[in-house]
Length: 224
Image 1 (tube, rainbow, N blue to C red):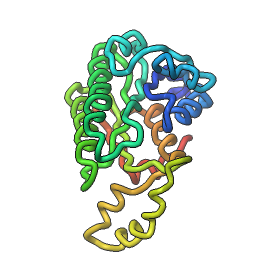
Image 2 (image 1 turned 120 degrees about the horizontal axis):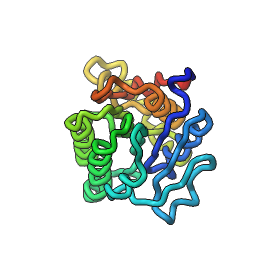
Image 3 (image 1 turned 180 degrees about the vertical axis):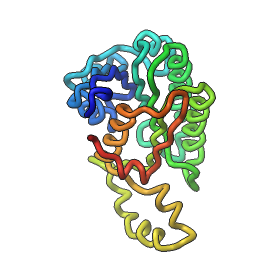
């Protein structure tokens, strides 16, 4: 990692979750100064080497107290195990938290927002996709320097059932009419997802632009 990429100040929301914990561990191992905003009940789950900050990512005031100019905000907050019947949770947790993140980031003068979105367009999970697309719209309209990482499903411990769909994906990739959809909604591993997020933290897009990292780019991500 070059000197320009070393030692960033990073605040992670959702840093005690499925993607958050390995991401925080990777960022700490690479020399970044990481803080994790978490509710009091989750503070004990903050990985070693990161500073635990008590707060609520759904509240702009908590984010404002935790952010400083020049920070990178990695926003991972979301409804656990999203499914078609969780529309109300998507609106009351996922959407409320990204609104708070964008509002606070715009005022704080931070370096970048890294946002976990979702692959789109998609023929399923319409409410989830709509909320994540709204998060991207908010980032774009605020003219924040931001990266939206768009997985569909992240394979890892306890999250492997979509491997049963591998034969269907293989067939779809052979059909001209389904190939693009199969690639856009492809599966990524937790290791690939962490690598893509680390790369986003270390290599921001041009100032004021929203960069999209889709499934093929997630699969190709490497930590230098």
